[in-house]
Image (cartoon, rainbow, N blue to C red; front, top):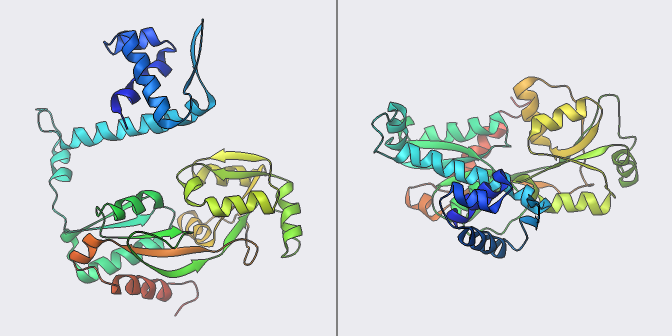
Length: 314
């Protein structure tokens, strides 16, 4: 994506004026307008509504803006860590940028702490602590990095089975209804679930969850007639809305267990086997991972660890 166009977009959104944004970036107004037009054409939607009083973001532009700002900030942060010209460069930057690591593992940041321990334990079984690094990121990012051979292996939730790298499903999880205290699903049936969902606004997670779990979200909307939503982008906000009796939602059962591990929450959760599609717990290994000696036993070792530490195991 054109970074100049993104900078221009953010400047116009800030100043609400193409001419002021152009002056701030030291370019002409026609150049600024051309950049915006090029960006809108590449995206397929209008970013601004233009009028005599200035420009305002369209709904699509307002939705797109945080992603553009995050991208620019992330690139700036990476440049700061990797750059060498600043004499005041912090020592920690050198340690991160120059830290040697042989193998890169990824973990879906929705997975439980137990799942992270499984990856760490498996990695330590084959490599020294200085020979690998583990990164926690959204599943969509892990999938992209595996395809680009920038991760050797990753552990993530997935509703799809077709990936351009080797995958092994080591388990499945039912979805669970997370609901306010005092409410119950009267019976395990689609009509009862539809009725309970109709009483509340449904917490709908924004990206990256929205696109990655589109199949489950579509099933909820179409089969259970959900029409009232509250959009959030993190689990803590969902938790607060449900605890205060405003909303209801559906997440993988492992996410519920992870929440109980982290903070001992007693927020009610009801598994929904048969009422919603299951979600796969998947290990992916890239071609680079194969070259670095990551074998199918990596997935098997994670599965064994999780079985040994499962609630009630032993």
